[in-house]
Image (cartoon, rainbow, N blue to C red; front, top):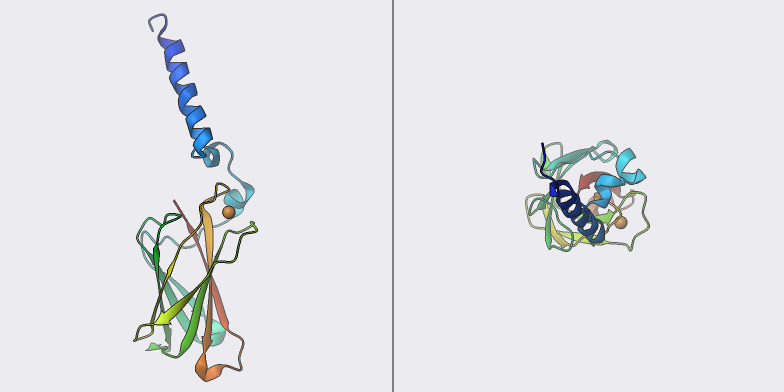
Length: 162
Ligand SMILES: [Cu+2]
């Protein structure tokens, strides 16, 4: 049987922790998950592996990796895209990654990626802190110098941010 006085103390501590959690926003997603988080799917887990998309219309394969892991807001992120067509590296592309949060209006955040050789494109980006959720989307846009008359190829990657 609990000693008298123990329960109120426990409740006080729990209450204090809850207040701190709400004040810092850390507990909000747990207690009040937003519609965008409940309904949205996360289709890339960069902590486990890079994420690959087949851009069928462009005959292209794109693999995105983000480091360091786990992905955090307000940290310098290294972005790496590997592009290939029929297993051959694509070396003539203009590549950008646009970051946004599904269901939110945010300032544009478009990062150009520069070809480093062998179909590998790299860039640096930062994701802003947002209390509204942890789900982010990266929209890849690829324009090839050899097929400039065509619209750019596109693919999206959805992932979770700490
Ligand atoms: Cu947001």
